[in-house]
Image (tube, rainbow, N blue to C red; front, side, top):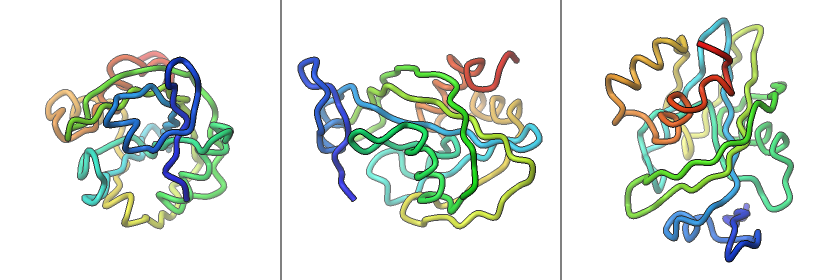
Length: 173
């Protein structure tokens, strides 16, 4: 698997090493997915071996697409790679852009395609320990309250999604 991600360099989209993109704060493509079941959101705790934001809680999954990879295809791929979750039909909700420090002198400057997948039943999960150390199902309002009370336990992008783009993903409060 390549560590090259689509990033803008001098206004042109180019394949760039993932770590270099984060160290240089380059604007790059990303995909984020929220999976919900009966009002509860599936969140993941990032593996402790991740090179940034290890051990923090994030949305269901997020990643960078491969060069020329369709964002929806990427979302489906990463749900399976991170969580062993198959047969999910993510629906594109919005494209947003954010910039956030993620520690270690790294910056996420992402143009993100946001997806929502609504499941009729809770699936069996098969976590990839290199990516995910734990998961939880949590009602959206409880998640928002936890993020407000203990923001340091959550990734910067999850905090941004909930604070600035909640309506784009989940509809009005």
